[in-house]
Image (cartoon, rainbow, N blue to C red):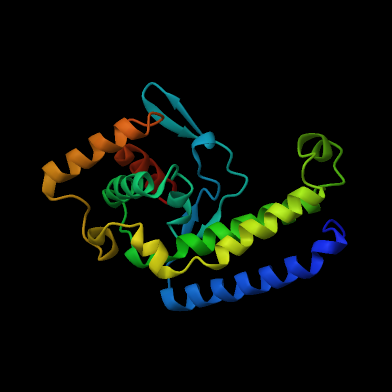
Length: 212
């Protein structure tokens, strides 16, 4: 609390309370979700490509969580692009592990929790001299004002918004694409739009391997 400017404390407290209530509702709607071992910080910056294959690094945040935690952070770009990325990732993931489509509605909640956790992580580590040097924008009025705006946007994230970004066949637990040709077409489109990866299926397979 000592990091939040006095003029923003009431607004920050209010928006985080609303957000946590919305997250509780999302989790209740999703019902029981199986937790597995996950990387926890699975984004493109933590994947090194060598010899055409991905190598995961930085397991400091490894934990037990829903499988989708290691999928949603791989998404980037506008909603249509993220939709194709997610479809390809789930297709590859499903070759190794079962994926519960109900987890898709957790994406908004997990994203919001990560935002809150990130601010708390910086606050806890602020006494470390390297942190003020590395993150000089954290302890500023502008940062907290922008955080409140971002969190207010997250309050509006509901299940229907998440599902609207996901293909119908994925939501209902069917494999994306119409058979082998449909899957091949989807992977080819994904590979063209996401140059850091050969295909979403490759990444999905490796992410699934983390849980083994």
